[in-house]
Length: 388
Image (tube, rainbow, N blue to C red; front, side, top):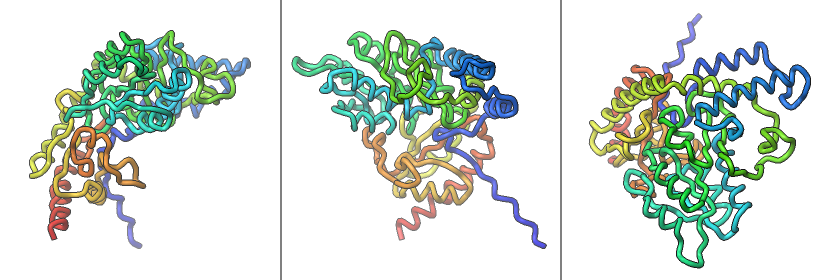
């Protein structure tokens, strides 16, 4: 009888899309599954009050990680919900003719709700993808007869090329103009220090990109700002977000936040990630027609985006997948549609040819070595086909 072959080893280099569950998060989920508390946090009985106490303790830990008061932190299903909520609530509360200002390099969950809900002012970026501060200041001081923006979106760091945005300067300009600012920190939380976001009025994060479970995130709404609810129903989350609270998700998210709240831990992980990211970049740039996009020296430590000359990005993604390596193309939003990247278009870069590589807590040196072995052959094979 034939012995089944072991499945081929996989090498995961797509942590910027989602990161595997960290042991701390898995332990928190297992502890909840084994012993609860299982009650409804809104009920006054013993099981309910135990669930409420656990939920609020998790909120306290998450708020400390994000530099917020616990009362300012609303649990959400993730960054997409938070970004949609911010845009819709601010639009509904203000002048319907007032635009939302944002750069084209923002994530789709920020761009698309803004574009669908009313006028938008698109802010330019430079070649590395960094927002133009003069353009921000200009839109905050419009000529007579034009309204100021209802809201400015500015991500902390870019999800495709890793470029860090000048959030501190943008925040000061928005505060001086009296315009609320929302910062999407889903790509940066746990990888960059969040100190410069301490006074940002609206801040969104998600758990799954830093090793927490999917389906849980948070929106910080700093006082005195208030948002009308996106989800209406009962009075959960201080009447700000209806729906039964995701207690196990909050507990697991808080466990990851506890680990990453330690500056020494973050520094250690960032140094390790940066070394592996740089090794991946070196493999790519050693080949002709491959360049690094963005600003790797000052950007996210775990992500590098390579431009690919003379070959379609989706072919590289599929070729590497066949070699057991998971990566992402900046030109692809999903497996269903390979589309040109608006981020790369805004940067003035070929939007159809990029490869994003991202490492994380579970990455090993063997994952980096597997890419170094496979990428030259995959690229050469595709270029040969293109030239045939």
